[in-house]
Image (cartoon, rainbow, N blue to C red; front, top):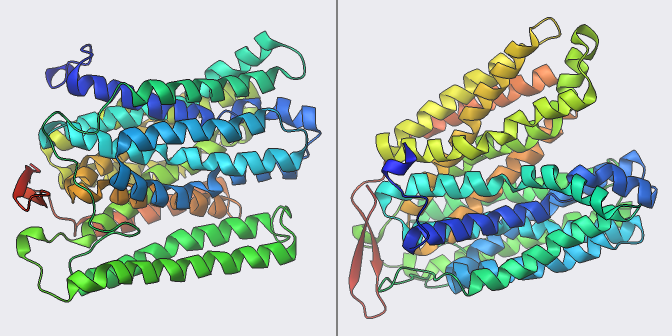
Length: 492
């Protein structure tokens, strides 16, 4: 099916860019999740307790929320080639720090810094959007996101055997360090193998860096409001690290962190107003306008798709074990393998979501997948120990297909809003995915798994209502060349 539109066996032109870029994303995810399959070995070597293990897991996502915003700004300003190469090279440094940490605090600092490499996803969205036309951008973004996202599963499959091959108590260190070396090497390969745009095309940049440009005062207020949940999620993460949570941060540093987060929010608001106030004083021609509601609704759609994926992948193995261990004799190993079925669907489901968007329309596709995942999570909330195990797994896989396809449909639309700000839009939408993960994992800490699935389903239904207000991309985006001429970019 996909081959009818893209010859994925070719390795030239836009197909080469697609393969080089999803591999960059794959490597960034291997580095980001290289700790997960080795956590028990790491904990044994450094004598970590359960609270410290949970802290490492929290720290791994803490920096990714602001990092996606920052990376979105950088990719629009400097281009995907330089930004991705720099991120992969820079990410190798905390990776080596993590590999050779001598105590928990060194390990925690390195893992916190490694959260930045999780923002690499944003860069490829702009790169793929530059190289593929509107009729193919959905499937291309789906392949990029789905195959690259498999890096977390790749880490789980490859790193434990590598640690055993290296052997000894320090085998995990060499396995982790190897991922850093691969990231550093690929940074060089990527830089010399790709270009930001096809030959003869213009790479459009924002007029000002630091925040997105909007085209009405109403959208300015909307933009400011939509940044609030990003800082609320960071506040929630700080709370989890404070004495009220896992007690990594003492009370005074936690209070300082709270203050810093909200000072940064008000600075961000100042930046948003400063960048937009001058051009909003004058009427903006209709051909140059875009609706910020498109960004906001995609934010919410990614919150429910990728956000629920992050949360469910984290808890599913234990859920299967606790539910079916006594009634059907399920072992921890079997539960882990079954739990992995939720994420592995990325390989085909994300590209499917993108292809469906290209073929049948962006809004219609978004509606279908969110209806599907709403029903899926409500069904998952009914799973109990008397269910046939095969039926429970089938329900989970069906739900995951809609979740992953939903991620593909969201980013099939992102590059079609405003070309010169695609990185910033992708950064904000991507950050909302992490916000969803933080929110749903917090919900899980207060509710039973059944209630957890029900709450995700109810949230999905609310997002479905919001999706009814999104506009189907049609006509053209308008961008201005450096010489003042206008370029029309087709979006349907």
